[in-house]
Length: 159
Image (cartoon, rainbow, N blue to C red; front, side):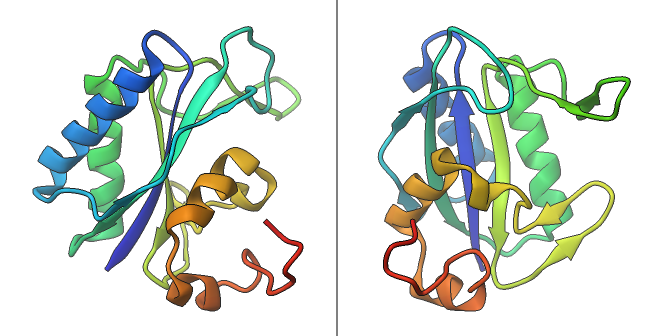
């Protein structure tokens, strides 16, 4: 099954962080990634920081339950030195975003839609985030594009 991820880093040696995360993901999944986008440097989204992000999209072909994939991604983030793993919210309920050494999001799990307390796939905010959609656009298959017209409109002016 095609599983797509977004990786981002804005602390330390960002490019090395991404390559290390990919190496750790390969080990955790027991398979080398199938496709990798170019790296895109972007402004932080949802918070202010002087540290720009490097982002990319990656595709794996996996035969694992999505919850297990999520657990493996969280393990990689921990191995990379990320300390906060649960979303944080302000007193008024707004999500708090912070700089991070590594952030891994599951974008697609084949053509499945998942909506649980701990996991939402496709990622609910991806269409609003050029740092996700631009790299993803380099590697996403036509099958995924067709399966999710709400995310990939057929209008040629869309990202």
